[in-house]
Length: 81
Image 1: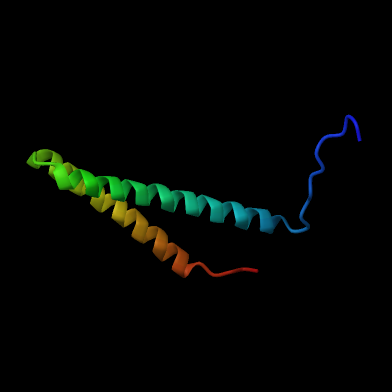
Image 2: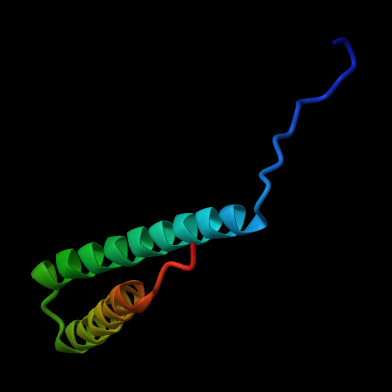
């Protein structure tokens, strides 16, 4: 066994790899969007400047729209396998 690299398992159906990587990507995107939403909510609690509050509220609305769009996409997605 000396000198041999790792043994790579090759799935029979390439769609399996694609669907797993898409799920991982969606999870990561959802996690980032939620972190942004949480951070903006925290900033809004302490911000007193009206200009900054307006900007943060706009950003919060954008992030919430992204999350809703992602959730709607997941509901409409049909399983092909």
